Image 1 (cartoon, rainbow, N blue to C red):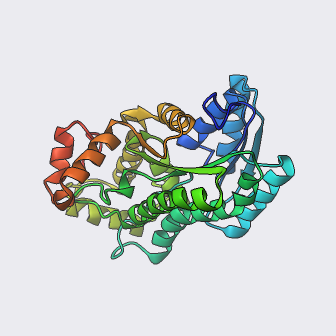
Image 2 (image 1 turned 30 degrees about the horizontal axis):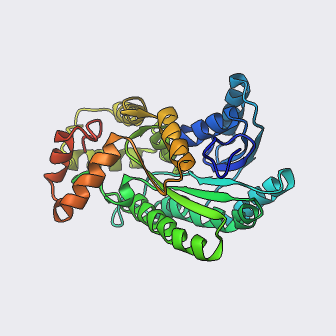
Amino acid sequence: MGERFEDGFGGSVAVVTGGGSGMGRELVRQLTAQGCDVAACDVLADNLVETAAMCADDGATGAVLSHVADVSDESQVLAFRDAVAAWRPHVNVLFNNAGIGGGGSMVENTREEWERTFGICWGGVYLNTRAFLPLLLAAPFGHVVNTSSVNGFWASLGPNTAHTAYSAAKFAVKGFTEALITDFRMNAPTLRASVVMPGHIGTSIAINSGKLHGNDPKEMSADQIERVRTRMTRNGFDVSSASDEDVRVLLQAGAEAFRDNAPMTAEEAATVILDGVRRGEWRILVGEDAKVLDQMVREHPEDAYLPGFMDRVHARGALNSITR
């Protein structure tokens, strides 16, 4: 392991939240393949088991510590930290990657769903940074890598979809990480911070979010299905002749399409993230979607939330698989 990570992550120790699926899983796999020991947490135990098994099948030389934890619950975060501290004497890099969708509307969604989304996407970043700071400071050098989103600079999924909880959380993550740059330089010079802003990446976040919010299409109640019908009708979809089962199938297909039709895979995204950290970048845009949106929002900030903006984004070849 070279000075910081220019020679890769072999011989270092990493923590990855949300390591059971998506970009988190691929970070664990790529880090352990380089000989990095990785402590991974996730709220879904079965997913963690799958991640560890994949690392073993890959022939990875780095060790894996798996721990079930809800990153929005400080007691569980501290228990995870304590397990890591008993396993290794320090941590070189913390990937605050765990995230969840949902709670899109302040008006229509429940406070519970809104705050659960915000608590995981923002609270998880804050709580884990607080918890692991002593272990990061105990290392010769350390790095905090926080996953925000394009929704950290553009609070939208298009003109027909409310997106408040996730966007508010991702803006908070971006601002927090940027503030850490000066804070670390002044008060913890061995530490660095990077913010990751992915566009549309092929992950199971839509599927997992439904499970965690109790909105799994296979298990939704009749009342939940009726609310979905109302929302879909308002957004211009004619579901008047669709049965409840048809609506369930549509919802499941949409979540799977988000994963399967994305322009960048989770594996590719993880590679971009690790390359950015290795180069010492503090701002890591992931995917052409992210680059296009970043440019367009900067050039036309007053237009960013007008109905026609999404059409212009599509015309630039970005977010074409998201047609909301």
